[in-house]
Amino acid sequence: MSRIDKRFAECKAAGRPALVTYVMAGDPDLATSQAIMEALPQAGSDIIEFGMPFSDPMADGVAIQLGGQRALAGGMTLRGVLGMVEDFRRKDETTPIVLMGYYNPIYSFGVDQFIAAALYAGVDGLIVVDLPPEEDEELCIPALKAGLNFIRLTTPTTDDKRLPAVLKNTSGFVYYVSMNGVTGAVIKSRGAVGEAVERIKTHTDLPVAVGFGIKTAEDAAEIGKHADGIVVGTVLVDAVAMTLVDGKPTDRTVAAVRDLVAELASGVKRARG
Image 1 (tube, rainbow, N blue to C red):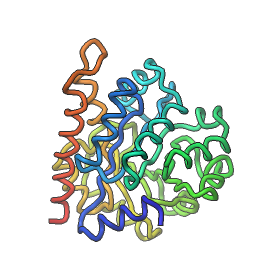
Image 2 (image 1 turned 90 degrees about the vertical axis):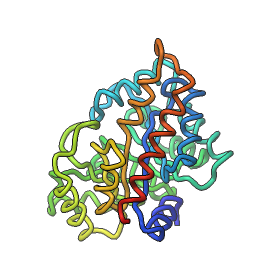
Image 3 (image 1 turned 180 degrees about the horizontal axis):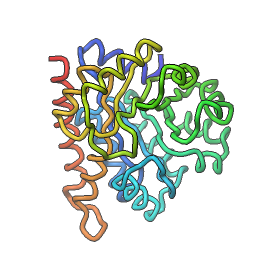
């Protein structure tokens, strides 16, 4: 079992969904971002989704776009992201880490070199939002063969005809995007999300995690009634941004993210209570 498999099994045994927290690597700077990453498990995060900053993040809303811009302006690179994971692993060998981003930086790095470096650093899985199943030979298949989970996105427009193709080489978990559009929008119908999760579960035994639009502990508790995992990102990146002064971190930056994750974790624990 991978770390991701083990963590979902542990959360299931505990009678609750997993809390998956997204933060942007290098935002607002390397040292602060490393401190945020290390604080996440202590605050209640079960799985860390670590954003690989990219200059053209087409699936991301304004908050995450700005987080990526701050990280890039601070000099963050893909090699730097992997270095942060490696540093994290010196202190934490159990928390799963999923890198989320776009194919261009990986292609530029070199697919084989990237996979080897990611495994060495301690990465568990990948979410690459702009590689459809038709391009699985590019990265998905080599990653799976090497032992990395490859997590695929499904959306409200992924119908039963398309779903088998999307799920074919998916591993770790299925990421259900709760709405059409970019990160940071508002979920219009929690009931519709629950129905979609149940539909996906008729096609796969993998855990289904729901992301996009989850902002509060109440959101986490409600969506967590149906989902195996809750993915939260925009509000955490916003928490970083709101503590900056002249673009620089303050003594509230790490604490703001940590406290928000703890609040979201409390909502996850209420989901099945």
